[in-house]
Every structure is written in C-alpha cells, then in structure tokens.
Amino acid sequence: MIAIDLRHLRYFLAVAEEGHFSRAADRLHIVQPALSMQIRALETELGTALFERTSRRVTLTEAGTLFRVEAERTLQQAARAKEVAQRAARGEVGTVRVGFVPDPAFAGKVAADISAFKRAYPKVDLALTELPPLRQVEDVLVWQLDVGYSPNFEYPQEGDLAVDSIASWPWLVAMPSGHPLDKRAAITPKVLREELFIVYAAHTADGQVKLLRRLLKTEPRISYHVPNTLTVLTLTAAGMGLALVPAPWEAVNVIPNLVYRPIAELTLACNLVLLSRGNDASPAIRQFIEMARQPGRSL
Image (cartoon, rainbow, N blue to C red):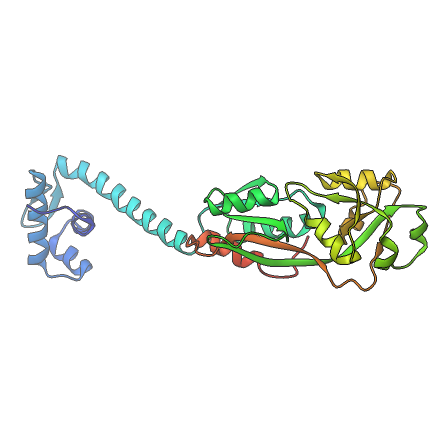
C-alpha cells in the first residue's frame, strides 16, 4: 500500500494529458518502466483502474475521468497553498492590529504610514483601534495589539515591549489671542512660572506635569486636567489657561482665537513612539514596524 502524494497526481495527469506512457515519461524526465510502476501502484491503492491500455494509446476509464478532475483541483490548491505560505513569509498577507491616540499632532505620520503600507502590501489587513497610551502598552504585551502609536511617556520596561522613537516636534505654548504674552516672538520658561496650565492627561498619570516641572524648574500651576486635545484647545481659547502643544497643532487651527509661540531655551521635544513586541516573528508585523521606523514620512 502506498500513500498518495502530489508526485503520483502529477504522474497520473501527465499520462492522462499525453495519452501515452512513453511521451509522459519523457515529459517527466523519468524512464517509462518507473512511470508505469507508479501508475500501477496508484491504481492498486485506489482499488480501480484509471486507464484502459492498448498497444497504440492510453485512455481514461470512467473512474480515471472523475479522478482527473479531483487531481487537477488538488494540485491547483497545493500550488495556491505554497504561494500563500511564501507570501506570508515575505509579509505580504496577514493581519496587523494598529493602535493610535486621537492626536492631530500625530495624525499625519500615522495616516502616511498606513497609506504607504497599504500600497506596498495590499493583501495585508489592518485593524485600526483608537486607544490611550497605557492601554496600548497593556494590549501589546498580552498580544491583543501588534503596534501602537503613542506620545512618549515613561513606559514600563517589562516583558518584550519595544519603544521606538519615530517622529519628533518642538513644543509650543498655546494661548488666547490678546494674552499679554502673545506680543512676544518667543516665550522664556521664567515668564511662564506664574501662568495657569491646562494639561492633556488622558489615561496617563502626570506626563505633561512632569514636562512642565522640567521646563519651569518649579511646580506648575494646573487649572485643568483634560482627556482629549480638542478640550485642551477649547479651554485655552476660552482663557482658562495656557497649554503646551506639539508644533503640528498650530497647522490644525480648528479653534479660533488661539495663537502659538515657541519656547526659548527649550531642548525637550514631543516624541511620537511606536510600541511593539521586540520578539514578534510575524513577517507582516515586522514589515509594518520597519516601514514605520522610516523618518520623515507625512501626508
């Protein structure tokens, strides 16, 4: 008894297509006796004759005709399975689960990366989810998320979490137009020490508060902790405090009555990081990570 494999199917189809054992053997680059033996073994395994043999030609039996249809389907499916496996190994198929924070400062980089990846790998599915920074960390570590776009906070160095800086912008001070400081071309940290600040604190302990402490070299005066960027801009425009914002916010300009000024002597930057698992072996995910690490991409 033999196990039917793809080689037997190829031998059978060659004989069926050529209608002759000698021509089929030449096509397969094997000797005719070996081919005849393999076909006999296949017929024995199946328990039925596949060919009617005469001195002049070979024709299919009824069982052989039906078997030919299934053999062709099987070889086609095997070829497709091989192609899918090879494409998966190259990162051309699969799924990448992407998390991101809803921040206009980062939107250009995130959108450009997604667009570039879909052009390069159109067969890879992208599952996009809006998530706060610490939730992204948790989901990456428990394999519920593959990559995350997040502002750079002090992430826990645990498990296989990888944190790559992929973009950077200077900080600006946002204030309502008519504020006493809006006449200055640049703002020094010293004059900000008595100002009230509105801080973005969505699902993070005190990321911006720590930044203000380093900038002002004193404890900042905080008027509001708010969960999203639109609220930060709205309250700032209403005169409820100043805000530290990444430079791309100035171009968004969705709230009237706001002005932005650079901060003199500031060496700190707003960094966008990519969160991932350092040991992830998925080719599609690795391709996405390598693409996202490329600097300078924006829409």
